[in-house]
Image (cartoon, rainbow, N blue to C red):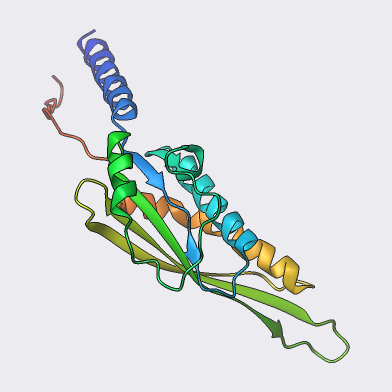
Length: 198
């Protein structure tokens, strides 16, 4: 009977902690992504959507898209070689919306190459994207962390197919990214051990 009561108490405590965590998720905004000039804007948008989808699937943070907030929305995001700048005015607006962090992204390259085909076999293509993600503390404007990634596609019949695959793949990296920068934290209140036979 004692074990059942203790088990019920432990289960209740665990449920309460999970509910508390869901209420205490960090509010994180995701900025428009920048890129080098030769990457099409449509590819940048698709790539960014893949990142958003990957972060949402982790269920670790409350992710908000700047594109969905009228005060932060921009008709057209200027692509730039340098993604290191932080717009202080935008951080102030985000802070008022209870945001804790901002994620910035920059695509530094999107390339395709022809794979060597054996004689008589059709030519195939691979695509490769290189990018970085930066987390900024909204309160201070200080960079909390930066990660760089590179993804490659499988061999495809056309360059278009290779590009589509590679710009839709980055979401798979987001679990490790979120686990590293937004780890689950808790406090152990008490550890009880039961003596053998007790």
